View 1 (cartoon, rainbow, N blue to C red):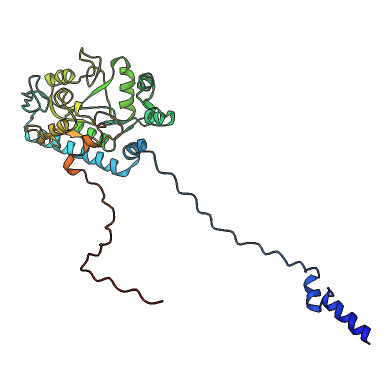
View 2: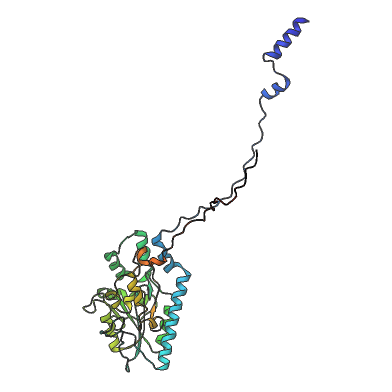
Length: 325
């Protein structure tokens, strides 16, 4: 009996499994696999657009730009209609002896009414060319690519919103529509095709379409404006650059702030929206220049000081005693 008790004690002490331990050590029964619930898929946020794309998004893709352009065309057509109806016929082309601070205008006399319009990004949107620029990631203007575009891009343009309606209306009221563009005269057939494809024609080179190379002034447009004003009473002009109204905007102002101030000169300030009509173009041109110190006046350069700091107690401020632990 003593041997049996000793043997049982040794077994318990040195590894004989109890019933509970034996159960834990026995092979576990396989549990049926439970499929995990699928996690909902949320597409990743698109990366922010690069800065150079912002102007393209606005001009060619936004409803806001379409509304602004349509608004400008309607105001232009209303203004010209009022001029024709009243018989006022006040010309808006500057005479050669004008300055921006002392403007004079070519008189109308009994000449028939007309309007003078820039082409690119005023009358038509160069969607195909801008898409190609974006895909090719061009950093600077490529003259050879643009020459090919002038010759063969007519199928890839669109009228600026509201342009066709305004021009059809004015033509019906006896107003001649004339285009003055810095597209090359050697590519006149391509310019005519682009305007006609956009539904803004008829455009005929030398009659209702004037181009770079038609005179000896190159890209300066004043000479062509004088040619038109000699034959027509120009009641309104439209463009996306200030040179679409006068070459003086490139020769007189000096610096960002000075150029900006010219649009408020006496004799010119009242023309905006009443003879001279500007279309939006944040994509290219003379308006896209200047650094932070050129754009923002010194007295308007605010910097965020950050969140307010907690007040520092002075000698007279009672500091609460720490609680005993």
